[in-house]
Image: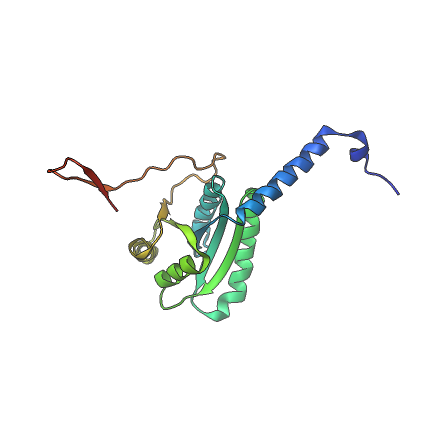
Length: 194
């Protein structure tokens, strides 16, 4: 029986590969028990940036990224599932330490309610969505989806602008939050409204 020369030589490079692989598997296993980040998408090439942003975002979170593709009819499910699987593999290959999985769902009532159903079903902690894009038709449809989810969501929604640079190697580590602030004249207490 031939023995692996890498094992016999005691190569530190080979040991580092094993340690990296082991650490990656441990991170993926711990991520499986963490938060679910829901990323609804139409799987268009324009929305691909949002998927990469979501994976990059997950590098700082103990959890899994759920890429959630909503379709109109059951007939489209096999083709949609195949495309979704390709995207999941692509993203998982680029962000190995991030746990990514995908689901295809036929629309229930309307797209907003389908997204909110997924929030409850998968116990998502945050939703990541793309900002409306170029054409007027796309802009109106995506705007109504984003607006509907923002207004009805019981969890935070992070909107990613179309111009975001997803090729940056750094993970997301700074987020600015905006809110309405009022001052109570009697007590001089500042209250943040959400």
